[in-house]
Length: 262
Ligand code: URA
Image 1: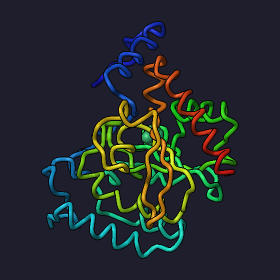
Image 2: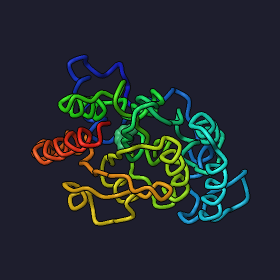
Image 3: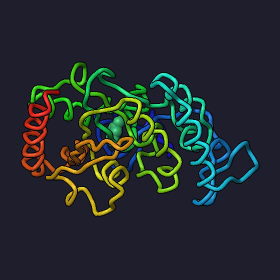
């Protein structure tokens, strides 16, 4: 898409920018043309990803390798390093940063989101954008802060291009990493943010509207950890009416935290 900047009047610039945003443009690019298809494996069939330029490896095999690598990690630092060096997920090629975690690694509460967006990719930490600001305000309302009281990560450590939803294959490949992440963090309470996180970790595809509003359990090495799925803050920004239900969820979470003395 090309505009001759000399023909654009300054009063039109806000409308042009809004038009770009409405069209889904969320990145600026340089003057030189890049062959993005040559840079990424986006043209590869859905059931396979390219490994080392030419060999085609089934998704299940890549997930097994991710699992082997993740299980060999004995600390969050090691896991972070392993994920950063992992080349089995093509999302890494188009991402700017690997997004591993944020918050207090010594807290007892773990939040898990879906996938990084443009702000998270830019800053290299989860929930770094507008939905993260809402998330912080939501938890502040029950006296919790990310600096002190909770820790967070995502199902996927890399942003899907254009903020599209992750594919089932991308989730399958990255799932061993977030599972090991949860084991190593070892939470007493888990909060799942949005449909992708809830459906994936509860292994239940019914949708967040039916999963929120009640407690579930997550099996962490034989220990049953209480899990509360919540509407994703990005959804709440689009659908403010759902904030009432989320407030009920947050009050339940606050009561459970007090009961567990976390
Ligand atoms: N949405 C998510 O699920 N995770 C992030 O880190 C940001 C937005």
